[in-house]
Length: 247
Ligand code: GLP
Image (tube, rainbow, N blue to C red; front, side, top):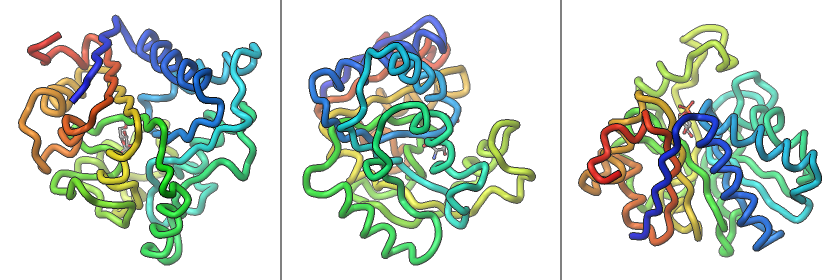
């Protein structure tokens, strides 16, 4: 395992460093195949990337983007849909051509959607996948117990994940509206990316980060699978790093 750890003083610095990481990779490879997360954590990184694009510093015209996951049963324009999130926070402000932005469809035939999505990711795989982490150690919607060789597929959300998914900016009107299922790149799919960038901010993530990076590699902590990857960069703020023994 090669893990580079960057501990930042706060959320804003985490976001800037994450954007620096993407910008560097993009300059090295303008045809980047980029796996993208949603959630609160990467909002600041997207803001940074959008600002840098607006200043003329970045060109996404040859980039392909691939969302990590999606709720099951939502229309792509539902306020909580990750397809909508990525449009609102990133795609609509930069020059990724629409045919080069991909996400797993969250309605219809789940097995067929999963196959289609894996085929789009293709044998080439992803150059980078950026991940957030759930308080229970999930990555994408790979919940505790998910197999490390899992491919993109239909999954059940953990109850804790559904609870955390309901917040003022979530796009859900009520707690009960949070879907019970999702479709997610599998851990096997994620581990095939050439580089992985893991982001976390805040004290609520400290335990998950410690278990992911320093705990046993176990399917009970999906993010611990990252210890099996050869090129992982972790950018976390001080609060999220608080429980790491090795800082
Ligand atoms: C969701 C998403 C994950 C995300 C996680 C953490 O469950 N499926 O991809 O990393 O939540 O979200 P947040 O960044 O809002 O804490």
